[in-house]
Image (cartoon, rainbow, N blue to C red):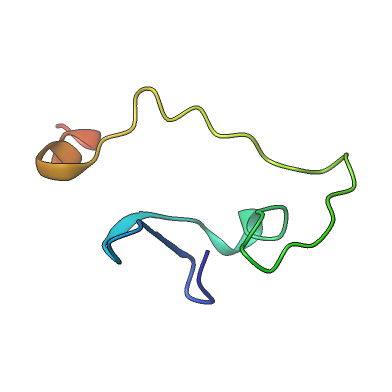
Length: 59
């Protein structure tokens, strides 16, 4: 998770953006220790990504 809120894939491409209020509990590569309680688990099974990302909003 970058300072701007974007999560990048291994190829450096944008995966998704995290709003400021939700950024604190995210793990990052600098995480040395995780103390349970207050973390976030994401269900990405229905995430709109790739060429289908625009389907996350339909009129």
